[in-house]
Amino acid sequence: MTSHIHLIATAFDGELQDVIRDFKKFTSKKIIEAIQEHPESRREWLLRKFSYEAQKAGRAKKYKFWQDGFHPIILDTLEKMEQRVNYIHYNPVEAQIVFH
Image 1 (cartoon, rainbow, N blue to C red):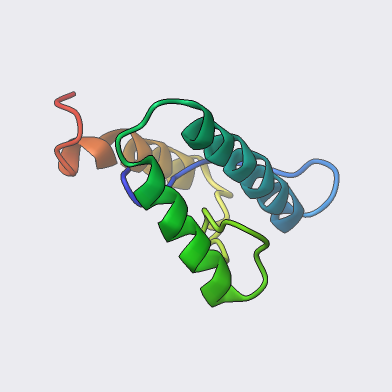
Image 2 (image 1 turned 135 degrees about the vertical axis):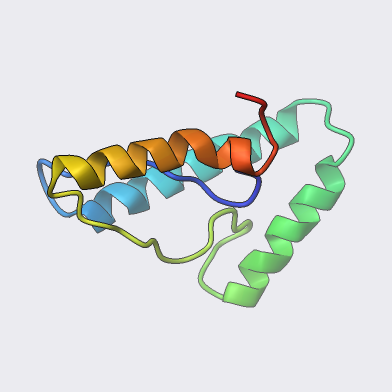
């Protein structure tokens, strides 16, 4: 998706919020590095936007890539798991990002 991510995750050791926090921290650093290092026509605009969001939030250091929070749903039955997997697979089709 263009503005968010869907994923199925679990935390075997620790809490799920810790896993999500670490995922966001790692990926945001890597994405910012990639934007800074590779030629990208929107580089300056992206970095300004992420810098603005960091200043607005007050907690982020230089750039803020991810929004705060996450919305976990417990997948405790096979039916719920299948429904979420199908949603993740077909969401980009519905958004017309991909054809199939």
